[in-house]
Image (cartoon, rainbow over all chains, first blue to last red; front, side, top):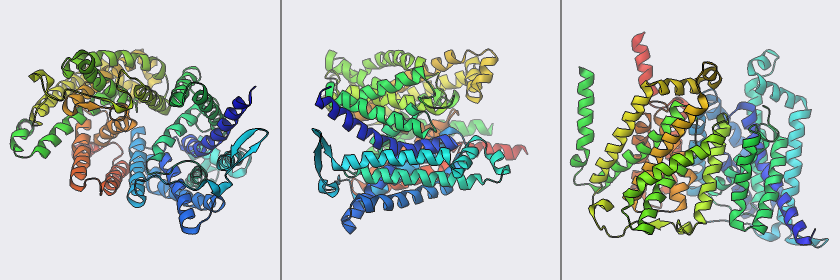
Amino acid sequence: MSLTLVQVIVSGLLLGAVYALFSSGLTLIWGMMNVVNFAHGEFVMLGMYSAVMVWTALGLGPFAAAPIAAMAIATLGVASYFLLVRHIMRGPMLAQILGTFGLALFLRYAAFWYFGANFKTLPDTLVGGSFSLLGIRFEGARVLAGVMGLAITLLLHVVLTRTAIGSRMLAVSEDATAAQLMGIRPQRMQALAWAMAGASTGIAGALIANFFYTSPTVGETLAIIAFVTVSFGGFGSVLGALVAGLIIGVVESLSAFYIGPVYKDVVVYVLFVLVLWFRPQGLMGKT
Amino acid sequence: MKRWLLWGVLGALVLAYPLLTEGSAVWQRLGALVLLAAIGASAWNIVGGYAGQVSVGHAVFFGFGAYSAVVVYTHLQWPPIAGAPIGMILSMLVAAAIGVPTLRLAGHYFSMATIAVGELVRVLSSTSDFLGGAQGLGGPAMPRSVFDLSFISAAPFYYIFLAVLTLLLGLTWWIERSRMGFYLRAIKDSERAARSLGVSAGQYKLYAYMLSGAFASLAGSLYLCMFGFVDPESGFGILISVKIVVMAALGGAGQLFGPLVGALILVPLEELSNSLLGGQGAGLTFVVYGAIIVIIARFLPSGLLSLLERRKVTRAD
C-alpha cells in the first residue's frame, strides 16, 4: 500500500468521523420520535457561527467554542421541541417536513440577515497548523475534529445503550404510553433527546468551522450528507451513523483522489441508493 | 345554486385576471408564476398527496422538462416547447427507473432516497457539456416565430399555464373518482391492508409516480419557455423539490385544490418581498416566510384547506 493511499484513507476516516458526529443528532431524533429534522443542517450552521463568534469576540479557539456551541444549540433544540416539534410529531409526515423546513428557512435567513452572506473562515493557526507523522501529513483542525467526533459519537452511543437514562429514552421511543405507565415522563425524555442532539450538533459545528468555510447556506450542503449518512446507517442507530459516516468519508476521499473531486458525491449517492436497494432498513436499522 | 354562482364568479375572475391587471407587468407576471407553481405542486400531489409517497426529488422531473426544452433549441434549433413532449416521455421512463427500486422503501426512507437521486442528477448535469455544465443553457435570444413563445407580456403565458393547470386538475379529479384513486388512498392509509385486499400497490404507486413525473416535467418545460434559461441549480436544485412539497402541504396535500392554494400564498409572498425589498432585505423577508410556514404547520398540520373541512364538520353537527 503506497503512502498516498494511506494518506487518502486517513483523511477520509477523519472526515467520516465528523460526518458521524453531526449526523448522530439527526439519527437520535429520527429514531426516537420518527421525526426528520429538515433544519438539522441549520443547527450545524449555527454551531459553526458560534465558533466564529467566540473567535471574533473573545479570541478563543475550539476548546472554548465547543462547549458554548453545545449549550447554544442544545437550547435551540429544546426550544424547537417545545414550541414546534411536540405539536407536529403526531400529525402527518408532511406537517413535519413543512414545519421543520419552515424552521430551516427561518434560521438560515436569520443568519443571513444578521451575519451577512460572506463566507467566514477561522485562522489555521487556531489548532496548531499541520504536522507530519510517519510520512503522513495531518492538519491539526481535521485531526481534532475527527478524534473528537469519534469520541463524542461513541459516548452518545454508550449513553443511549448502557445507562438508565438511555433505557428510559429507548422505552419512550418503543411505546410512549407504556413508558408513562412505568413512571417515565415521555416529554421530558424527548426534550432530553433534543438537548443531546443539539449539543452534539453544536460541537460538530464548532469543530467543522476550523477547516470549512462558514456561511448562512452551508447547512444545505451538510444536511444532505447527514440525511444520506443516517439512512445509510439505519435510522435511530448512532453506531450505524458512525459506521456509515466513516464509510462515506473514505469513499469520498478515494473517489475524489482516483476519479476526480466532482464525482465524489456521485459515488456516494450511487452507493447509498445501492445500499437502500439491498438493505432498505440501512446498515444497522431495525426492520 | 349559490355554489354554482360562486364558482362562476371565481372562474370569470380567473379568466379576466390579465385584463384586470392590464397596466401592471408585475401583477401579470405574478399571476403566471402562481399558475406555473400550481402545475408543479399539483403534479406532485398525485403521488405525494393521494398515494402518500412523499417525494422530495421532483426537481429531477422539473429539470428534465426544462433541459429537454432548451436542448432541442440548442442542438436542433427547434422551438423550446417542442421539447415538452420529449421531456414528458423521458420523465416517465426516468420515473420508472427511479420508482422501481425506491418505491419499495417505506416512509422517510423513500423521501431520503428521492433526495439522493435528485442530488445525483444535479451533480451529473453540472458535469455534462451537452447540458452546458454548471453555466446552464439559454433559449432563443430573439423570437424566430410565434412557436418560440417569446412574449413581451406575461398574459399569454398566464393563459397557457391556466389551460395546462385546468387539464391537470381535471385529470386529477377524474383519477380521484376512479378505481385508481380509491387504490391510491387505500395505499396511503395502509399499504399492507391495501395489499391484503388485492390491490397491486407497487404497480399503482408506480403509475402515480410516472404520471406525476410527466406533469412535473411539463412544468419544467413551461418554466423554460417563460424564463429562457436553466442551470443545474434552477432545474435540478433541492430547493425546487422542497418548494413543490411545501406548497402542496401548505394548501392541503391529497386535495384537488390544495397545491393551488399553497401556490397562491407562497409565490406572491416570495415574489413581492423580492421585488419590494431587493437584495438588501432579502434575508429578513425570508425569515418572515419561514415563520409563516412554521406557524401554519404548527396550527394547521393538514394544510389550509383543512379549515374548510373543519367548518363543514361543525355545520353537520
